[in-house]
Length: 300
Length: 277
Image (cartoon, rainbow over all chains, first blue to last red; front, side, top):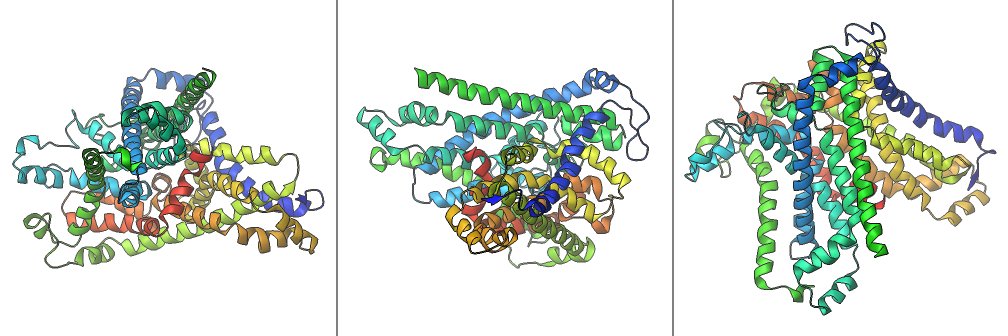
């Protein structure tokens, strides 16, 4: 170890750049968001025009569009957490069996996680477009014309379709995390269970899942917090309109529209903070539930 | 474990794996193939290989859409961000892990908390700052924001790596008369190379793909990044599918290439936070 006191200049010179960037572009702005939520703002063109106390909060919380967008987000988050966890776990389990080609499957399943969300959203927008999209053409070619839909413009289904696209985009992360968890379970556990006559399902629900409670909790938090702040995929697919109507308006989209089209930074800040706080609370909840259960099992 | 499994269940496993592999890969393959077709042949020959490979779609992006400029903008911003981020993060991680002082863990914790801040919360204040600091249409400002937002995760992973470096070796270097700075440049940095390489690639992927902050800060067409240029497509009438396919391929190509070459490193780097923590 190097002595701090004898090398003060070097130490401070090495800490300072990171600290400045961090304070100036991250900590400062978060504090600023908080502060701005109490001011009346006129966006990019104008500037702050006075302290208004909690009025921005009142306006946001009495805005039914905001609550509707939040309700939509809850549906989106629940769908994504369930599907990503179930699909991620299933794929991870199958890859962990080390069948022939497992490496190839791992390579493929994680691929969407490194691709530009903008680019692949655009890709899905083309594939699912009503008249010339690949999916509808494929269905028609196989004589299933009755199944063709306006996937991205029919208000009844488009939100769910985009939620599914998001599953496609992000399932790679839970997949690799759960895979690492499954591979970390000692094989003796399975061998002992096999001697006791456990079959495949018993192995999964009796050993694999209970052994990885903690990693499942961490993974769920990751999926949840990524889903909470969804913006890009809706922005690109709806060309920035979050329509038809408001059906694809998620809170971060509403925040964007309020702040950058409506020039109201105060209300926008309230919305941004809301999403951050709810996401953090949900994460804490999952974290403690994940560990409490494990604690009980260890005790029992 | 193979001996516990019947033929049928193996077939079932392959069925599920195969279906999801097709769902993942086929849209990309379709987009790739369509990007070499013309607007006519994409309908007459939807699913096959292009009969003749047309490169006009790619050429059109450069001549008509100014994609060359977007690519060079994106590359410039990304490369500068990656290099600065790595340098600054390594310097901080070096002090945190190799200097003896009480606050070191607290300092690390203070930076790691930044991993919890979603970039969306920064959008509004960054826009306000940009107004006062001439940050609109300014690559330097955008790059600074990128450096800061990607830093916490990088510091977290690199500190973890530097902490595990062999103590004795570094002590020996000190005894041989290396100054603190020399320990950093001659010993710690070379030893940290694997982590630096991995985090550099991750940072490249993240910065290349970033769209939201660029959307707010870059308003001029000649300053667009690739993500923004792709975005302009999404607003247009759907007239030129093969051209859009070509644009999508340009958008995904750099990160896909890095991923295919350094697959294991990238997966390990991206999951380091979840698996260790």
